[in-house]
Image (tube, rainbow, N blue to C red; front, side, top):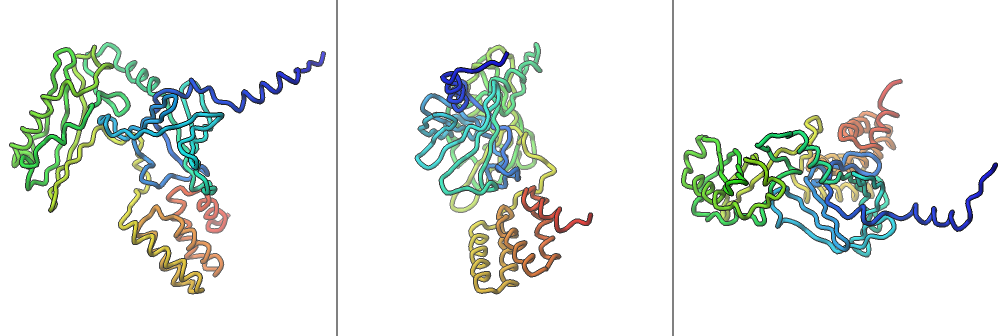
Length: 348
């Protein structure tokens, strides 16, 4: 017998399918992947970044560092239908939401090209942490990871007087070890020629860490005897100021097989690109190609420069120049460039 769904039920089903379960979105999420909407590699400086989203009813807080809690940036938001609106002109379109995953598309008014629109994939922090804890079994010692680590309520390294590190270029690495049951912290560092030259600075750094126990959020680690946090740091003295940068863990999402992003001079690349546009408008095609290639060499995230080189070269029937640029686009995993390379630069 044929069954009919009442009209009012169809209306409810359609309306529900366009809605997102708001309560399912409100949680802590870890970024695990970022690509452009057309599938191209994301060449922005944000592509392989660490990022945690903490979504509450009316606020989105972004944490770009696994250790320093005070580096967060919070935005007022409105979650409605299938979007997380961050401003009148920008929002995140919720592409897919499951029990443990969330994918969003970063939308902004005026940006319509799919190779300029970022898509991000997140996993619930609770899932990642539960999976990590399950690998520890009954171990009493935990080696922290970027998504499961104690964190600092404030950056205590800013408290180190410059006098202790003055006139030194120093790199080092080791472990911060937290003892939750003993309520103490220790700093281990490798003895290197550099550290031996600046014993005073290293010992003050060690002393600063050892006094920091109550600055750490360690709730999830209270049952462990030890929590080990790997670190590396670089101190560089350059007139008129010095900088000290701490890094924790390794970039677990960075693909060693990827061609690295190299930005020699982003401003000069942009200026050179604009000169290429002017040369193109003046019908100086060879000069335009030269300038676009130079713009790419100065900043290899500037793939628009390569696409312009390809377009001009194809119009000139200069397949050699076009295919050199298309090969670079393919190597940088740009979807349209890869498709064109396969169409015009490979023999069947």
